[in-house]
Length: 80
Image 1 (spheres, rainbow, N blue to C red):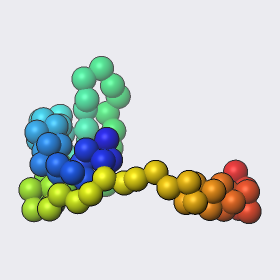
Image 2: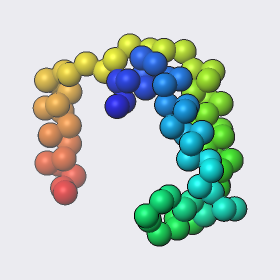
Image 3: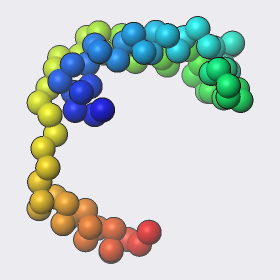
Image 4: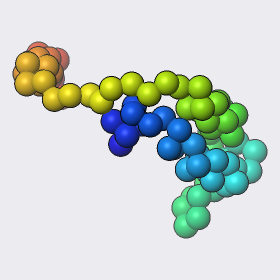
């Protein structure tokens, strides 16, 4: 999903706009789930929507074996 958002940022806007209807104040009530109290409420979702509208597409992330080894080393150094 990260690469999809990077190459086409606007594709996620409709999904976020749909989520706005489930807010009651700062509580998100998704169907079939318990309410989730948020700090920012719908304002954070609206800010994300605006960011995606303004965002320019960028290239996909690419797999780099050297970076993977570096991340493995870091985890081994710092622990689980």
